[in-house]
Length: 148
Image (cartoon, rainbow, N blue to C red; front, side):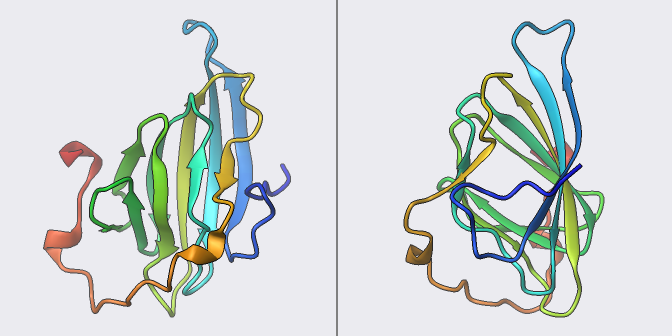
């Protein structure tokens, strides 16, 4: 499948590749969509929202991902860890926490099949200043899907 850019077209570093899409047969008007998001070292996504109906679970495949959703503090996730986004969430930070290694995550959407635009970048993507870079990730920074 072809890479899927955020809308409007972002000048950021992420590559988004669609890997799966299927209507859920026992849940009316819901489709499962799976995407792999890959960041080069230091790469990030623009501030964005997802389709209004979208519930999202993100599972880190490689590297270290930093994420901030809505008013929650930024958190850092490593391979095997994950996080979720409720419908209507505002994704303020989505980036590779490393300046030397690539990172990737599997994003699984449960979404209304009529929602064609899964990700929409904020109109003023430049409004967010570069986030401060932190030192090594400590155990207190990690949260797994079991703790969500």
